[in-house]
Amino acid sequence: MKFIVFIFMLYISFSSYLFSDEIIDCSQFDKLSAKYIECKSKNLKTTLNESQKKIKFETEKKIKKSGIKEKIKKSGIKEKLIKFKNSKTGFDFFKKDDNWR
Picture (cartoon, rainbow, N blue to C red):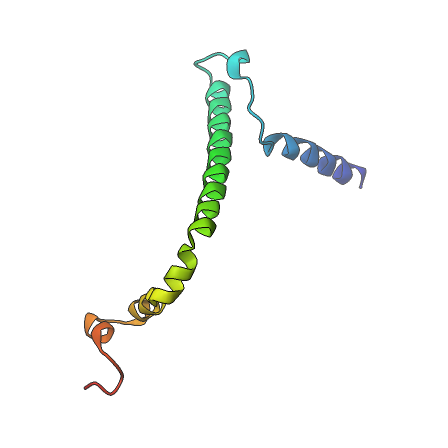
């Protein structure tokens, strides 16, 4: 039982290290080693995630400011998109109503 608890504690300690969102100093590794490449890829992933969050936040702020959601609701494009998605052929999409034929 102690062995299972020990393994669990090791997993928790290493998982926090592996999933951390910090930029690691890669200069400690040799530039031709696999550890260096792994370090660089983790740093790239971290910076991309940070920039993605920033862009997402700014875009949501612009959407709220411009009122695009209300314009989309008024235009009826959502219903047209659902109709297009549910149509099997182009003929089904361009029908005006079910009794058209």
